[in-house]
Image (cartoon, rainbow, N blue to C red):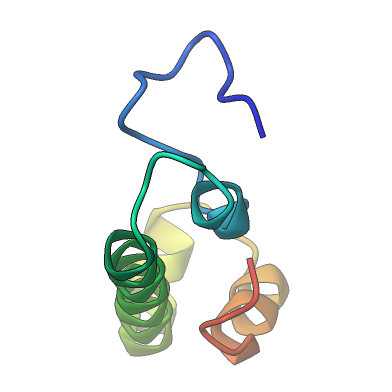
Length: 78
């Protein structure tokens, strides 16, 4: 899958982790490590969302319902 023009060639959006897995120039271990790093990043981000207090959510002017939905997703879902 092509990477959009506004991104550098070595980055990819978190919502499309399998695009990097199909790149023909990457070895299987490199693709597997890329996927694991994406999953780790998602899990850490969702853990951070779960740890936000209601005061922090209000101060950041975020939608609590959307935050709960995002935090409830498993790490392998974008």
